[in-house]
Length: 265
Image (cartoon, rainbow, N blue to C red):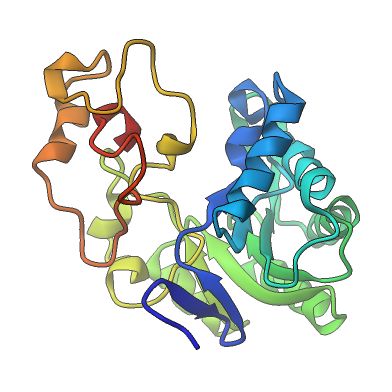
C-alpha cells in the first residue's frame, strides 16, 4: 500500500519520495576518498535507520568511491533498498566532468558499478549525460541491451530537456528524470521540465541541493535568518519569501536546520 510519502518507481519499486544522494560522501571536488571514511559509512547507515529506501549515486562520484562506500556500509542490502546509479561521464580531475557515451564505455561503466556495488542487477541506471558526440540511439541502445541481459532493471536520464526525453522515449522506456533544480538554478523550470508537468522524478536534485545533509557554515545556527547568517545575501534570503513550485518537498519538519538560509543552497 502506497501513501503520499511514497511512489512506485517504474511501476514495481516502492520508494520514499525523499531519497539520499551519495555524491558528497567523497572528497573535495567529488574527487577521491572522504576525509573521514568511518563517518561516511556511518552517515549511510544512519540514512537507512531514518527510513531512506532510495540511494542515488554514480560511478563518477569519486570516481568509484561513492559506490564502494555504499557497498562497504550496507551490503548485504535490505530487501526494500533501491540503489540508483549512473554512467556516462569521465572524470579528468576534481570538479571536472566530461561526457562519454560510447557504447564500450557505457558497457564497462555498468559492469564496474555492478562489481563495486556487489549486485547482479542495478534497479535504476541513468545515463548521466547525453554525449553530443555519440548518436543517442547508440547510447540508449547499449543500455537497452544491458537491460535485456538482466543487468539493469529500469532506465532513466539525467540533465535533459523535454525534447531529449521525448527522443529517448522512442528508444527505451524512461522511468525517471534527474535534473538539477534549486533556488539559484531554475533553468529546467523555464524549459518546461517534466518535473513541473506532472511526471515523476524520484531521484531528482532537491530544491536546496540537499545541503542540509552536510555541515553548516561557520557561525550559522539552526534558526538563523537572512542577514544574520554568514551565508546571508540575496540568493539565500530569497528562500524566506519565494514559494517553491508545486510538488517540491520542504525540509522534514524535525530537521534542526529547517529555516536556516544556508541549508537552502
